[in-house]
Length: 380
Image (cartoon, rainbow, N blue to C red; front, top):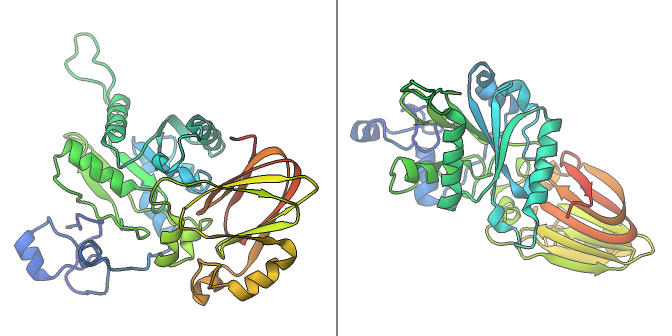
């Protein structure tokens, strides 16, 4: 069965509306090295597609990994380290070794202590019962970083030659790249293709859209095994599962983040677009720094005026979301109350994180009910 070289979808020539469609003439002209209609439209016309949100289908695709002797590369976006862990992943990959590759570190200011992130990720992975053999912090856009990952994979795969032996011991067969949608797996794979397979340009389809990879994409790792890219998991605890592409582009940092810091008095509220409302209360001054996309609008107001602001400015100042259809998906709210004494960081899946410093204050975070919110004390 032929597959699209851009997204891994099974090729079919009968229905242009379904995944994997290729006109018969293209199959005749190009053979198996062909892009499906969806990939062609994304690559050449910036076409937009709605991703399929099907958790069961995703788990069905990866469930057989647990029966293999494999290495799993779990790729995580540094802006979403809690939401980057796929729920119940250990049930589907078993006790296979996991190399965690944390991507997009180049968007964070140099003042951020990356080592702290590594320590936190290590702690989370233990809670998730993953057999982690290492954590690497990279930018998939930098060749040097990706070369270090390739070297690490090789070191994990092959043991040193035994005395009087001509062959190295092979510790695992296939290597799977797993992660949530939009963490940069395809960008990572394309860089590997340029480094190891001498591809002159990107082969796998990448775009600013969610979930461009549709099925497994296999590249040779050696003569007997493969490096396998997998579809991105659409995490129901992440905003990306509910908003459209226009809103998503505002959330995803595309370049170096400019931290926005506020010195607040008590009884003030900050809106993060129309996605989250954060209320600050207490008797002490509060310093708040937002590590989020530069394009995401922040609106500061007195708490007493917050409800009126939301009522009058939704879909105007307070965007994203931009449409009522999106807002309906995010309509049911959850409220998290935290007491801050010293420094704490609040992570909101799909947005980023907020660093708060105060002698003592109360913080109320209101987000749509499915969205993951976590607080860590003394993190940065």
